[in-house]
Image (cartoon, rainbow, N blue to C red; front, side, top):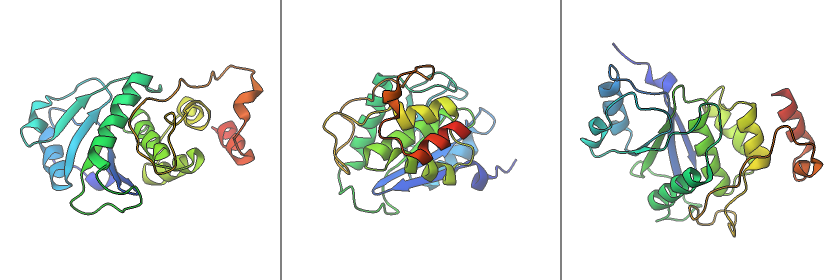
Length: 206
């Protein structure tokens, strides 16, 4: 069985950050995924869903697997965000945030089941920490991973997630996690502060 990786794997690069969002390998497809990910320079696989394959298969070719699952369709808890940003910081902080990635740069692969919710949310958080505006981040990721994010995740990225304390545009990331998401049922109009008219329409359409 030949897997159409061009449709399943979505590279997302920004400044010196390099990610690969994908769907979930299975015991039947894992060896093809290992070969493909190894050829793309993947150093780490972040698995945010329940295990469907033995991670030792990746580890046998020096690809580290991090098991950080959270609720399907939901947003990541603060401690998981902190661990993910620490990994991002460790892999990518050796060079300037303005520097473009090279073919030899580390690459972090992130997957959930379909690669449309939990995985792109984590990548979006890293892009926001690196200086990208949340609304731009959503559009940027969706251009590379069609169908990414549900309404809960959109609201989290636009209103609920706060950059790490003291973070500056393009500054070092990975010291603390984000804040909890805004309550979708809240009547507090203060949550709208800082969101453009287009951003509000964007949320309304979703």
